[in-house]
Image (cartoon, rainbow, N blue to C red):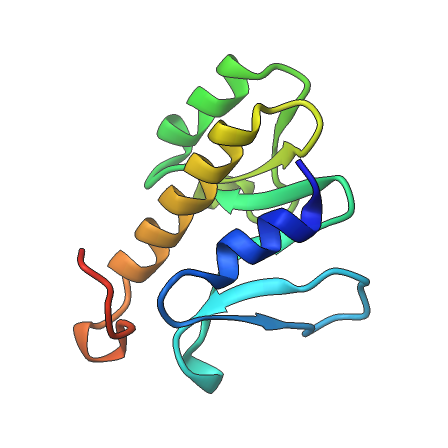
Length: 120
């Protein structure tokens, strides 16, 4: 999958916006307003970091389904975040992973900060 197409998919979600908190070519995608915004996707040239599950055990299912193309995300892995290869994971599963990451992140936000149009 092309990173631009994936970014377009991310930004189509209610309340989603791109941010560049670090010196990288590709943004992180957040949901929620301003300082309360929470990251649900880390975009890279050839991979995307997503919340793979509510627990590390659930997130490990991605590692089993896609050995080598799915890895535990550095620094955030213990919290259930994975890096998925844009070339190694089928497009429909990448979109599914982003959708699930969004759902998990928004689902943990206080109701008052959830974006309009989100049904959780």
